Amino acid sequence: MNDKILGIDLGTTHSAVAVVDAGFPLILADRDGNRLTPSVVHYPAGGGEPKVGHEALRMRSTAPKRTVYDVKRFMGRRTTDLKEDERNIGYELSTDPGSPIEVLMGESSVRPESVSAAVLAHLKRVAESAMEASLDRAVITVPAYFNDAQRQATLEAGRQAGLKVERIIHEPTAAALAYGLHRLKESSRIAVYDLGGGTFDITILEMVDGVFRVLATHGHTRLGGHDIDQSIVEHFLEQEELQKSKKELLQSPETMAKLRAAAEQAKKTLSQELETWIEIPFLTQSLHMRFPFHRETLEKLAAPWIDRTRECCLRAMHDANVESQELDQVVLVGGQTRMPMVRERVGDFFQCSDFEETRGNIRLGQDFHAQKGPTLNVGQHPDEAIALGAAIQGAMLSGSLEHMTLLDVTPLSLGLETFGGLMNVLIPRNSTIPLKAGEVFTTAVDNQREILIHVLQGEREKASDNWSLGRFVVPFEPSPKGVPRVGVQFEIDANGILHVLARNLHTGEEQVLEIQSAIDVTDQQVTEMVESSLEHALEDMDSRHWIEQKLKADQLTQAAQSSLVHASGLISTEEREAIEQKISLIRQIIGSENTESRTGDTDRLKQGIRELDEATQELAAGLMQEMATKLNPLP
Ligand code: AMP
Image (cartoon, rainbow, N blue to C red):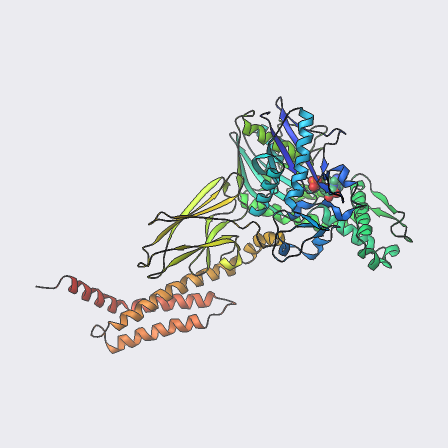
């Protein structure tokens, strides 16, 4: 067995495999010389080995129901995550509410990870044949925004393909490695803008003294070239020739597949030309389609999609605490960045001051010195960079490339629900992984029999606004509040997978949380989560302050109420009435909570707590004195 570790870019539309050989990262081509393999798998009707790549792609128009493409979008997801338009793909997806997605083919069905496994097994064969050696270790890349379930599904695909997955790394991180960030100045910063077929990521990386650090990452798990293609198709359907038959066209998957293919082809052509002709002779029996399509029109259709990436770029810079002038380079990856408009817009987003076009192979080790803004680095092969980077990471792991370490980050914060329904963050967003973090929790009331450990992911203050990753209960023997203690540890391994461990510190008993295999939230919600945290920052802060004061008020009113029972002889009737009045005032404030704007309520509650505190001073002192006398009776 060869000790080389393969680098695999398991892409939405295309996949590629690379290896570092004699110190050089190389893309490995199949026997026909193809360096990219379409991520497409065809399952023959009569059974037998599935066909993968170009061979499968050719079957897409004739057997769409048995030819699976774009399956990366469905990895680790459940049927409830799907939007209706996502089912519009030519093959059938299962509908059982809440179950993991399956591709249905007549009697049989196949899971997305098995489809990806077929692609990975194909790439393994391509590599083995190119290297004339048996190879079974790999580094596989995933988008930065893949959640735990999606990473797990990727690992599972690797396992099914007979690969030992040594590491899962972010695609932009891999791209930065391929572009030779490590050969820039001693300390350099780089942004990787990756716009592919189905996903978008922006990552800010830093390289200091041979150590890579991801400073921040943002993205959309459902934004890419396909969306632009879809807008083009919609534009075609508005053309005079097609408008009349629109309803009929929309109902035929084969026709829609033809239109989508024409749209994508036109889009690619317009990366070089200013005008192209859309020609489909037999779109239907009676319909022949022929009309011109201009770059200007394409740009109008694409602009909203490209502009949606701008906000992510700004946020990533904000999170990384860098200004665009402090970046050395902006690297473009993903097939869609071949579009001239994407290059121009990204140049604007980052205020790039110059342009570096790399011809031929990707150059490693160039020393760029941008004077003002960063250099916009446009690789000749934006679709190969990720696999090359993964191979470099593989070589780093196998020890054939030294002096480099790779640190990755968590895309969203992880934490636990606390008393009162707030999110208590244990691992903040953008923390470097692998890492461990822990905290000790205790009970809030006497004789509490259990503590609920509710694991959350997200950026909002209230637990209910974040996603639930799972929950479990730690039981106790009845004892006074504050005595039982549970240590909770979060560990994120090098693959970005979360393990939650809870230990009863008295009995030593441990429980490990099995994170459910898919999270019932849509990818759209991932983006919305990050966006809504900023949007709702003020109201979230209001909620937190209100809940904290409410908990405090509950504790204080309960304590004051029970003290009053033992108060006879210690305070005057007026003092008792004053305390009772303050307690009822607090209850009134809590009861009349205005959920629209809590700021005023929180201030009133704070004031009420202060007044109750003052009103009970005398009583508290009296009770203390009484207790001291009981404990040390005077002779
Ligand atoms: P990837 O997921 O990185 O393989 O990117 C695939 C996406 O890039 C698809 O949406 C393609 O249509 C798009 N793409 C590939 N080549 C070009 C090109 N020359 N011009 C514009 N888009 C392209």
